[in-house]
Image 1 (cartoon, rainbow, N blue to C red):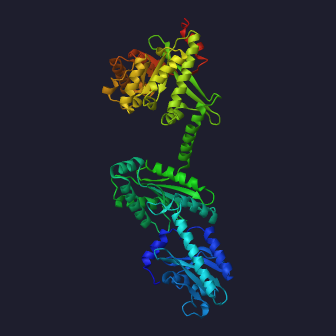
Image 2: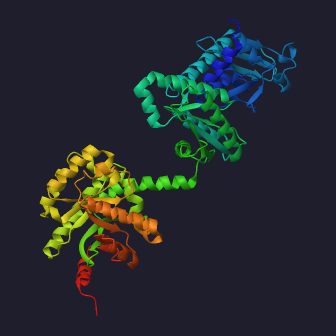
Image 3: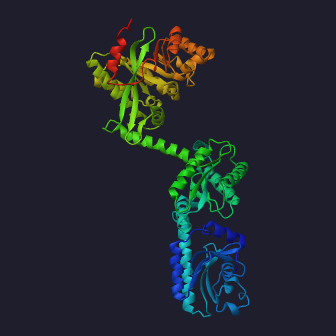
Length: 587
């Protein structure tokens, strides 16, 4: 068979993603068989690149590659026929070749040909003495070359190639990282992840234009990125994500500078640059020491961090990763804590007093978590994480049950102090939330007026229609409702006046700034006036000084809560505190 177009041949070779990959036992096994069948010390699977013969597998060869010029395997790849040279030194074409200069005298090579007819290289055997070849040996060499091609096709087709881009996939990326670690241990390298679009952008493209359009976008971007790379293998590791490993020798600064330019080029030439936002994540790793899955995980984290940066390129940060790991651990462990009988979770109560006479008229139930390994976890850290997860419902139900159990206990002691309980946005999205709260009240034999449910502005506004339906059901059941952290959300006053709430709690951030100047004071004053205009009682949170309490009292604020009056108390200490607070002050 004659020679094929060289450009097409090289493209076919590179599409198979064999060049510059680590040794593989599946190829080495065939190479050893060839050496044994011929009784020769040297055998190799030799791939003909643009300017070199690169050995995917080799026996008795120290070098990973030799120059292509004058190499017999290059002739085999182009001409696609069996080549036998009984004595290299006596052959005018190869007497001065690199192969002959190494001491080789005998060469036999069978071509490696794809189904499309592209010659990739040769399976060759080499000896240090001249010799002849029998017909049986020629047939065996052709059969072994065919076995190499079967292995190449299997590796390319089964579980290693993405069907959309026809590129090596995530499995191959992980395997090649592992092979690199075995081949070259202890080398500092950089892995790169190109993320073409945010999840919401992908969703919009698919919804409006369909999956076919997304596939075309991905294939086009893959071609652009592949043109930017030289010898780095490109992997399609997720729907809109490509990864590759930079060659050895890059510093972090060089890496970022290079990739910033590549990203600018990608964004400028992308046909979807107005509806997608490409970013690049980079992670340093040590070959043979950093687990491949950790490389991919940290790449994903770096790409997410890159979306927060104007330049669009982010290098993995150990500190940021530790923070993400901790958040994930807290989320995972909280689910177990909800069912744990060892008392990881508990409630404390913070008194709420009437500013007119400093009398305790209510208290807020606050969740606390003592992690068995991490110790006390601040609610400011774990509650926002839980409220954004599926565990939010379990959190509210646990606090509700504990608060009602405590109210029933106080009721038996003759203590009638209502408790307020925080409710998340996800609770208001549940169709049966109000019914479950009412059922819990009946189960504990607690009157509806003894609890107050607090919702934030943002929670009430997230799904306004569903939230309003649930809030109205709760109000109809006799449960008092409050807007928590008032002023921190972006609620419409027109909607706010529709909410069936009786209490508005001014966020502590406004109270802390109240004593700093007239503008802060005027802002709190306007909130008090506005709340009263809605026929709501006003509770100021975060009162830490007598001066703040006096200012609030003067402007007509109804109630207050904060360390000036009392810190959050263990439920067992609350009755004693309540008794002491009710006593008249000493003369």
